[in-house]
Image 1 (tube, rainbow, N blue to C red):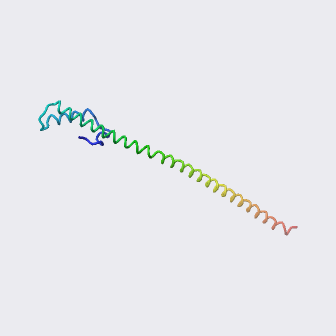
Image 2 (cartoon, rainbow, N blue to C red):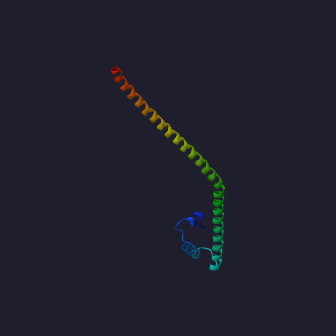
Image 3 (cartoon, helix red, strand yellow):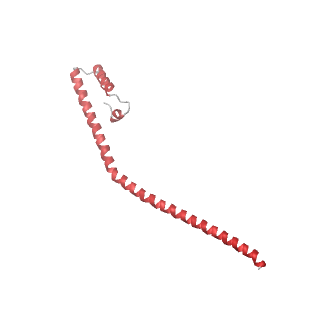
Length: 122
């Protein structure tokens, strides 16, 4: 019988799968009627379907258990984002203040230089 992965593959074709099983049953070494073979194949398909259902249920349960942690991580990242934005604004404000002080210093130095030039004339 096929594994769960075979059923989950993108190129799985149910008709081809059933036809291949019927062809194998007709060539099998077991003596018996086609009805018996088809009922056995139906039972195997039902078991495979139950296995797939259990696998999907398990995957769904795991996903549901991860949702609270994912939401918590989203909130944590949002807080971190706000913190980084505040830090960036703070750095930007500091750089602007530094540039303002630097420009004021240049103006003061230029004024001082003009005063030195003007002092001997007074």
